[in-house]
Image (cartoon, rainbow, N blue to C red; front, side, top):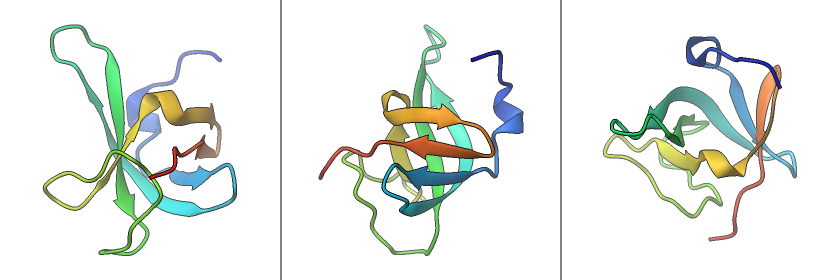
Length: 84
């Protein structure tokens, strides 16, 4: 995969490999010291809805999805969620 700028990802749909729609990408978090990407921060499809991701939410209720779960990035970001 070629270089993808983070700002071009904001607003993309996040879907699971099973077709589950989780929401849209709000931002990507990174380790400030190493620059390593950590989580996709996802605005959930519906406020208060839960999604089968094992990492929980941030203080604003956004889903935190580890970047290790990202399978493909194109018109949508496809993740392989880990069971809760």
